[in-house]
Length: 147
Length: 141
Image 1 (cartoon, each protein chain N blue to C red):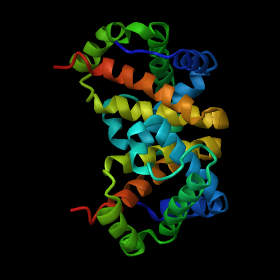
Image 2 (image 1 turned 120 degrees about the vertical axis):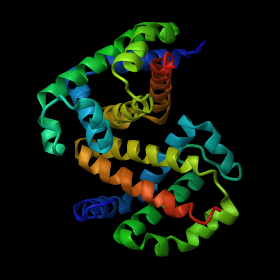
Image 3 (image 1 turned 120 degrees about the horizontal axis):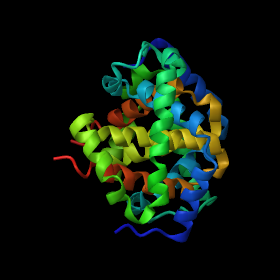
């Protein structure tokens, strides 16, 4: 059972309530594909990923990034039961999408950096710790049903 | 593998940050202490509270070494020779901490450079810091 402090709950809710899902979602997925190019293996049908500019301008990537980010809403609303909340999604990523769970950490690192760039000074070490703890729980839940 | 353009980008960024080496270094360290409490065990002999003189001077040392390496990345093994010995035989820091610190440095750069910390800059910097950490740990065994 994950124990959340009041500060952590408030921080996570606050960050997500102020998030521009379109901007951040697209930017995060694009950044992941650029910084960790091997992740492109899962996006063969997504059109032009030839270079950073192409990836950043790719509307399919932008849209999918938004979808992924909205997927995190479920965890924000169910912080005390993230494992159960993502059981189905975990099965999907394992059985249907065949995504190596290590990739979840890569994407979450990119999200941390995009949010840091958005919030600047306000993304203090304590806020970062809360955000990373949240993402670590999500990442763990998403990998839980792999076998 | 770093392209010529990436090496340029990396050395440009660190040159720009050298004047604020203390701020950047201290912040990266504080982020690491907040997110990886185990890393604090290496600093039991120092005062690592925010804005302490120890923290700032230590942060500055680290950033200046990273900046120095960035001036000629092909010579990293030579530039870092003495630091390799220090880390291997005296400090003996578990190398996973280099990853944690590098990540916190990237977050610090993002928080400071905001929009200018583009995905291309991020990729180049991540590669450089990984190479730096790898060279630094070469004498460990």
